[in-house]
Image 1 (tube, rainbow, N blue to C red):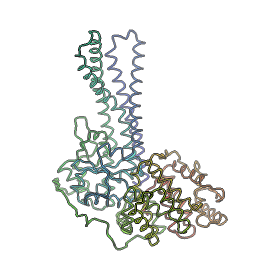
Image 2: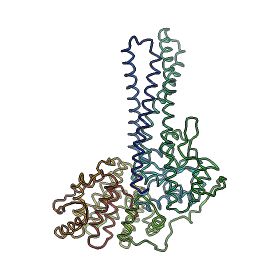
Image 3: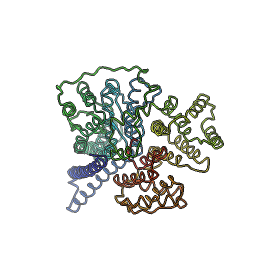
Image 4: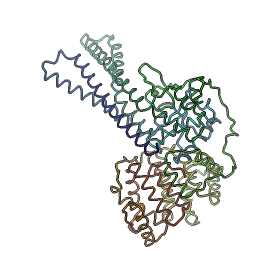
Length: 632
């Protein structure tokens, strides 16, 4: 099953989720109407009154459920993965101040992110001593990884890598978005239960206050209201348990098979099934429970089952079956975990390592595109080498929220001394007014390292920096964005490198900070976005020639060998605004069409017979815009 088939499966699961949701909603509405009818039946004088009451109560209940779902979906859409992590009591892990075990965790997440072609997600640690983990978010851009304190404490590197690989498979398979949607939808059918509980609580407060010395008629009124609230509250609470039951059926129905697939995907690229199997054995020998009051709401997100209650169907396959699938000769014995302690000096980024990088060729890129969303052991090893190539100072600063901004600024500095002076003044006026001498020296040192830095390392630095930049406040981000655009436009001429860098950095951050939403996928056929594709391809092929006549000839040559009937649009007719509009329009294409657009763009880039570093940057920017995780 490839990336696109898994995306389609996730969408099919979404449809299944909606069907089950409506079945649960109808059952709850009917039960609420029936319960209320029993209470007020003596006041209903005719068939008309009964029908009217039933319809009103049914649609009133329906409205409450939908309002509950819409509220929760809005809350989750705004907060993304970070909202989930913080709701569970998670704390963001920063490399500065992290212990050795936490640094090991951050290293693993970095390597797997770069190997999978997505920006490094923020990592949160939950205070639970149990062993568990989760991935949450609406997409790659706002994804977070959450890990319990017990997982960091008791799992060795191979075991932790297996668990994190499992969570990344959920990110790449499109499971996260379905999980977030299901949380919002299920909140609606659980809302009746919450209302019932709230009414019983209010009845208790009124009951306590009714003992005060008031006039008899007032006291009698309070007693009547209290009794009504209590009876209706209990009925709603009991009926709400139907929602709890349906909710757990839905979670179990959409989640169990996905866990087997995620286990298999993790093993596929680590090629070490015992790592993941032993992590599961340690859960069997201890616990995977999450103690947050919100744990049950997010139960289907976790690596392993997190709660046990009468109304909870297991959202995960049985632990022993998962272990058997990974370790067929397992003797049935679980592992009682012991704390693992790493030495900080032994896990810090190596100063120097043999450069065993894979050569980037056209066949390599085409192979990666055909394997979108599939992480290989080779990619994982290459990711480690990419990280090792980054100078220590740049690496250290790219992981901290404030200094990561200066890493990006350094990448944008022009070679022309006059332009660089203008850019440096912009940075100094905006950020270094406090005369932070240490930061100034670091910034100057980073600049001095860039001329000797391979351009392909820029992409890795950006992937790591994005994780730190996601922790900015929205106000800080908007200031950072303003300065990035000011640096790009300082010479009044946006180069193609600056153009691609802008989208690599600002597009995913716009999503995280709510400046822009991930577009809905509505286009299935190329004809629906033909003009926008023509704009993008024409701009790309022009970068290979800087001459409209030659670009037009080459473009027509490509179209002859392609099924697409596209026309070249001259550079003078393509403005920055028109190109940006085209980019965001093609994002609405469905995955298979986005892949086709990417392949056509690569055909334009390779027309001159080679793929330059600038071409690779263009491919990465397109992959980011098209939400296609490609590791090159």
